[in-house]
Image (cartoon, rainbow, N blue to C red; front, top):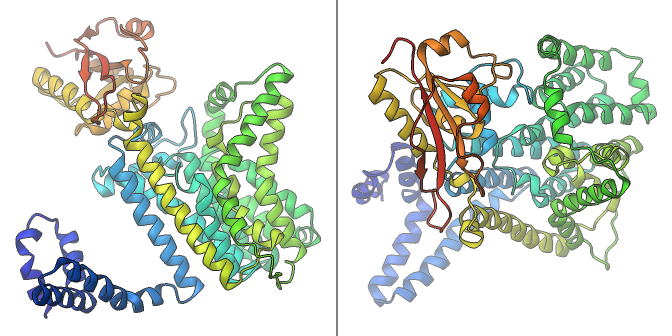
Length: 567
């Protein structure tokens, strides 16, 4: 049956579908395999009149028709890796895009920074904001774009770990080492929120891959790439410097690494990273290292030994939970009846994997235990890139047919469980807890209500939104005018705002009355009242959240700062 006839049967349905998806569906239903399945199934239905026979024929012929495709997808470790990577990319992008009704906080904040094309912010370096602004332009403000980008970051990390493993333990073992990362919560459950923590994953993994190649092969290109990934990582988050120190320590800990110090390579890597980082370093100096204020405020130092011990135990417990499924996957690989016949990895490989897998965590452990700093779990997102390869090299699990079958079943269970837990948390938790989540916040409705009122009164674009990043950022992102955000009404942390321009064109002030689980403030914050005494306070907006669960509505206060030349 020709392709055009197949598509013709479904024309009434396809007219409601966008062209790209329409072409995909036509290709599927026009394929020889699908034609065989449908023809066999409908023949069974016609001759027997039984839907049970129809479904049975569909099941049988589907199995036989797609068996060659499945065989090709899993024929080699390389094809199996790409099947796994693309499956993760597609399913997690779909799940996060469909389950989350509103963008999360870090993404909203990143978009607010991104439109200003900053070289630095009061919290983080600008890499995440730059990428989000590019996405905004390329995808025309598509909601799914940051979710797709998060999963691309995860898949790139998988790829870099896999490539590193191929150099150390071979194709099959490297694939298992990458697959084990699916059992780490940071690569699935927490990955949809595209923030600097998630964006560190690929740069740390790429830096580890290039570092290993550079030390082992001592090629100039690898040292240059190491400097490139290092700079990109530091432009993402300053904690990348910790991983670079760990790599440097592993280099000094082995004779192969120390031997490289006599050549040009390591100094080329340092010079490359430094030159690329220089613009941001200049910005830091010019702004008196402004991000340090934010970092110090977030560390929350304890001042008694009892609290330090409790904080450290909680940090360890959090990482144990994050690694739980990965540990279960390792367990199913063991077979008492078989002993591994692989040779131990070379000594530098073992040192490199040990430092890369545990060095950053041990450094944070010491900060928490001895200095009393409260280390947040999400800060440790990129710490475990190489834990799967470390387990393969040091624990040496058996990889016989029985163990691999058990691993495949357990991995499928872990993969689907992660998807289920994420979707359930996003969609069902408001029904269970009756507590609002940021991803069901009515950001679009809030933006439209405020912007429409502004347009009706002033007949001009809204140029500025002032206030806390969450409500102000939502108004800005969902507005076609794309107004600038004056974060917290503070010009020091929002240097892109010109005070005279703001007075000329005016703007709106927004503040949360009941955005989360509790009432924050019922009137305009005093700092904003002092900065904008001319503001005209409006009736608070009460908006239903994007869920059918019985949760309190969002209540947002707002005020208009009229333009100087408008009534």
